[in-house]
Length: 235
Length: 254
View (cartoon, each protein chain N blue to C red):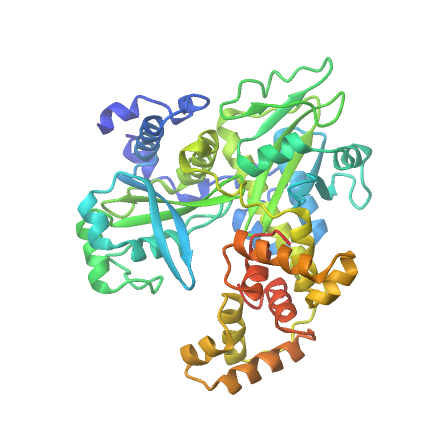
């Protein structure tokens, strides 16, 4: 499988990615090119204060995923992940299990046995959407570190070509200008009545706008809605 | 795969380090030494030199979904602003803003006699309508934790080797990251807030009520409220919502 993949240049996929199958061969090619054995593309779901990983594409063995668990995968993907333009950090579970303070010695040994002796985690941006990509190899030093930046951006470009595969719900849940305006004022410490006065609408309308904004941001209350909006750069 | 020699090559062959005309361009130092806008302008100039571009500008993408616009951060005429930059920022930019929100792929355009032979046909890049009339240029969508932007380079002689594309784009990413960080802490003094108070504030930002915070941190509801109101005071905020917003903008909580 790998020997076949080497013949293909990852850049030859540019403009030709249309299906999940194409994406799989693209990832296989790229994984081989940088000297890695495995890849895993995840998105992170925030659930109050816990994060879990949603696996979008991967060539990990199914049992390995089950054994390692989604919670640990989420922290593997998130904690060391760097944006493009920053030197990636290597995670070597077997030699330094507690480097990132995220897993027990047992979990580290498990990863090593399952063929993930070194792991790099990269942050991918596809438009405003954020994904995480794990590259791993059976032994430390196999992955060519200097090839990772190129791989990282190629993945961003490749995923940009097929946003439909992952359902871009970000555009649907965009706040309207009015809802955003209300949130901005609330974040400045204004009460509903004050915002109503500023915008020249009734306070019921303002409450409505804010309620909708809270729902769209899937927050539980105003404070969380404001925090979410600031974190994602909406306000 | 590659031969063993290639694999044992030292790490410092990473992007950027060997191409800076001024000999001072190392990614790590780039990251930590961008503390002012002039620093960022200098960094952007290095990228422009490597692209053989005559001018550049960096924009932040406005957050409004209904009125897409580009807000200029700086350009190659810093501290002034070039007419091209104003021209790009002044118009409705639905096309490019939509692209940047959905995609990270670089764009290029040509208008007029000067050909773009050197950038036409680059893998992954997309041809778009000219951002400014009569010019040739490239635009790189960039994203950071808080918001998106666009790094634009102009010039009739723009040229880029396929294998340099990733390096250039990666440098634009890290430049934009640095710029968003500068803007956030521009001229503010941070009040001293205790660990416990911050914990309460963080939980509030995550949607917890005082009662829930009290239970989680094993405090009484009164103590939790006390912590929150003292934080609100220290941050010079009028209520909790305001305090959460201020703390996030100051980078006290994430």
